[in-house]
Image (cartoon, rainbow, N blue to C red; front, side, top):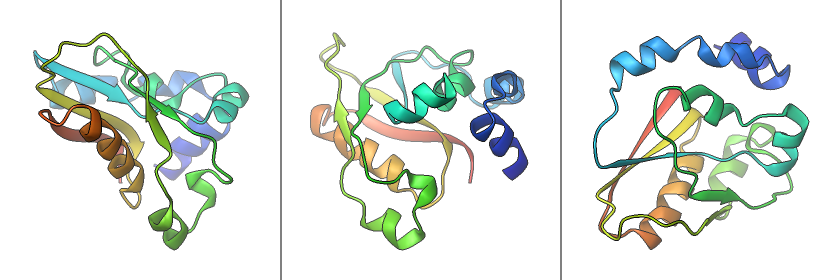
Length: 142
């Protein structure tokens, strides 16, 4: 998996996004009344790569709704050690969207679960705005 992410994210091999499509679709069929929210990339990283790796992985598997925006941070998560990741403050903000008032279920989508801090921050941001929703996550790797 390390080589996969090095090529996909580090070298920008966008075709690799399709490698796990069949497995994801089989294991996680689309559910009705679920809002699928991809973790956004840092704007600078997205400009450098030319794509959001999380969106690339999941856009052919789920109807995506971009509800989160990543605030700029000093270092990316990949450049932080475990202690720095766990100590990081909230780096997401909500993008206002026209959604049903009663969003019942949200599934956060991410590529790599390392310490869980990114998913936790996303969940906290979404929980503050959709307190009635059940929030879960799907990640490709841990």
